Length: 501
Image 1: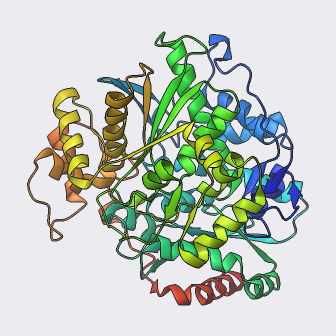
Image 2 (image 1 turned 90 degrees about the vertical axis):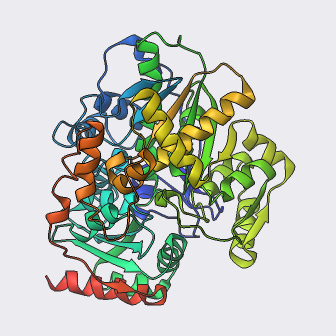
Image 3 (image 1 turned 120 degrees about the vertical axis):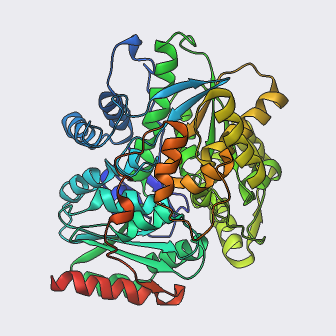
């Protein structure tokens, strides 16, 4: 199976080449030329560990990797040293919903599900493609991707990683996770601006021929750990299959029954993995796209008009504070039946005018699978409190957005289909917000954010994840901040500094 660009420059490559490159040479994103079918999505009700299931799913998406290579990568990524749950992604029944907990990895966020295995896939890709240059991984993060990528790529041979995050757009815990990151090949910079500014800056660096040439002289090539890289997106399809298998195994559904998934969404990668799982044969009913006050995706999925020209809101669910959802481009390509010319035109309009509108046929194809809703900050906080009081189950503010949207859909659709809500972060990553929602008093900036973890644990009886415990006492190693315009020079300086080591 080969991969091609969403923008249609004729570039065709293998899975390993797509992972190594990160982004296509025309600025588009790599997509599968055909969708393989995962025939036995219940695994005949056999006992199968998460690493085994992930290797099976990836074997279809990355056929140029051997079964042994994928089994080894999965076993090394999804083990008890990295994940606190034997199930890796446990499915928990809570009230009328199922919660798929994706935050039991080392950084307590769902990004670990992909970024514990992606560096291993990239390392193999370098050998498979005969690449002689080392990789410089550039990351723009709205909070969770940065730490997960730093942890995943720390001291991985032949890689360096540089992360940019918005200076005021992440939680205290997210910031401290990144700024205390150890490793001989890592760099972290705050960017003056929001996530979209940081992401636009990274994209412009990828598009710069001058930077690529300068890096090449240092025997370096650019790649990405954001979900624009197929190596990030492909592993995420596995937990949709594991959730479905768990429902079959516990008797909640019969093989072939449809299941809805509700996903808190920012850059559209997490929910897009569910779309690919459906394309691979998983009986997905609806994919419910849950947004916060930055509801650009809700408007698009309802109207077909994508308009980023709107106020940007900093909310208590910062990983969703995004107005330019990069992975949507992949969905547009598939919904437009592979018409790269249309996709290229829409992306040009977004760049030039800040908006575009898809045709009716494309919108109808999208709406046949996707449904969208959004929840404001007050409603999300109330959801955290309501679920705790009724179920003694703790939600982080992102998962609360999805929980609220799932409830809205259930009332409106009455389709009777079971819904799995993707729980994307530990509530302890946002202890100040969760305590406020639970009525733990007004949380001010003067309050020690790391003491709040202990306060939340004492109030609820939940255990602080090991990766967050003691975080407040760790030494800050990365405190630099830059303007968006300075990001290219930061990249070149970082490359030069790494070369000097």
